[in-house]
Structures are given as structure tokens and as C-alpha cells.
Image (cartoon, rainbow, N blue to C red; front, side):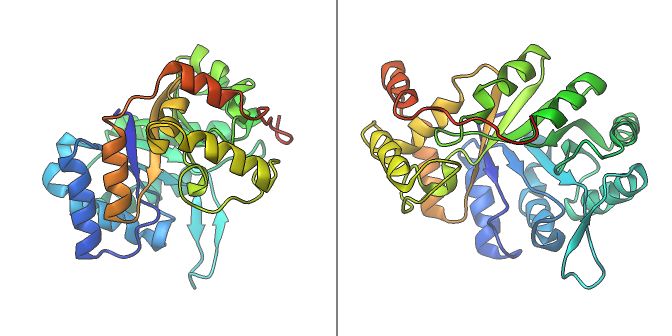
Amino acid sequence: MSKIGFGCMSLQGNTIANRKLLRYAYNNDIIFFDTADLYDFGNNEELVGKALAPFRHKIQISTKVGNEWNESGTGWKWNPTKNYILKAVDKSLKRLQTDYIDLYMLHGGTLNDPIDETIEAFEKLIDQGKILRYGISSIRPNVIREWLERSNLSTVMMQYSLLDRRPEEKCLNLINKAGVSVITRGTLAKGMLIDKPSKKYLGYSKEQVQKMKEAVSATENPVSASIQYVHRHPAVKTAVIGIRTSKQLDEIITSKTTSVSEEKLNHLSEVLVPNVYEKHR
């Protein structure tokens, strides 16, 4: 997988502008695109499929399953059952205009799920050639441990950034030891590490968030520093960044050519005391 992935969730509507943005990313060597059947009622998958169809075999598409919209479209329920997954995948394949999904992830997960049944569904889809790999998108250490022990998943997607270092306590090493890859999300902490106003975040005060933002801003490139920090851990293979505008995409593209020294990354790790998971341990 490429070191930077395009998080498609923020793109609203199957518009010409959004399709151009996705193709511009591909033309600048971003080849991993992350979506989900939940986003924009499936329209996000349709956008990704239509925009990237000409390059399908040169890119990797990740999508997610487990949240089932109700008939009125006013809400959804959690449904990780085998029957639902086997039906949902066909709808995602159609929207994505493809006959296979590179990475299919459970969009959440709890210890109350029928985990073995869910795994059976993913394994069956691999046998059918509808998906190439599967994983989970979860920040819950107890759920991640169960999946590592009971499945052949290849990937865990989890929130990880300079303002969310909870995975460093145990999860990253545990996942890496199992030979599984990590995809990070929230790598820019909702933009607070670069240009969004500081506010309370995951146990840090507004002042602490601002302190980290100023430290990141003092590096050669705040986006580069934020992304390179999460890539320090060997488990991390891709940092998915939510992109909505061409300006944001240009910043991501520029960040790929800027290197931040190990000394400065070490300094960033010392600005705040790492936070830890308080629930689902």
C-alpha cells in the first residue's frame, strides 16, 4: 500500500469536481482510496468507482461494511452478521464498478458481535474472489485482540496521531507482532495539527492542543511531520488523510517531498504526555 491514502468520506456528491480531485490524486501517485458503504448512503462508493474506473487495476480500494441503513434513510443499525455481509458486498461491488475489493473492513466491532460468523463471511468472500484481504476498523484494544487471535485479517484501521497516541501503549506492538498492518486515520487530528482552531481533544486541554500545534508548526512542514510521526512505528503502512479540496490535496502532495528529521520527530513525542485508552482495554 502507498504510505498516504485518500480518505474519501468528506467528498459529498458524485460531482465532476470530486471526480477530478480523485483523478488528480492518482496522477500524483496516491493509489490507495478509502471509502465505506455508509458514507453518503453509498454515493461515496459510486463516486470512487466512477472516478477511478479507468485506473482500477493500478489502484487499491478499501471499503467497509457493518452499518445497515434503515428504509427511511434516517439512521442505521449495527449488523455484522454473515448473511448481511454477503449481501452488502455485492452492492458495494456494483457501486464501485469492480469485480473485487482490495481491502474489505468491518466498520467497527464489539465483543458482543458474532465474531466467528463475521470471519466466516470474509473468508468466504476471499474464496469467491470478491475481496483480496479483510480487516477491521476499530480503536478497541479488546476487540482487536480477539480478531488477531481468531482470524487471518491483514489490516487494522485505527485512529492514531500526535494528539492520539493511545495505540502506542500496547496495540501497535501487538498488531505488529502478529504480522498485521495498521492503517491510520485521524492523522491530522481533525486538522488541529495544522490549521484548525485548537480545542479540547481526547483528554488534552485546549492549551495542550495548541502547544502541540505550535511544535508541529515549527517543523519544515506540519503535514509532513504529522504523517511521518505515525509512520515511525513499523506496523503502520498507510496514513489515510481526509481530503475535500484541491488545496488540501496539494498540501498532501507537497508533504511527500519534505523530510522531517528524526531529532524533530523525537522532540514532538516529548511535547505532551501520551494519552492511553480508558475503555475497552
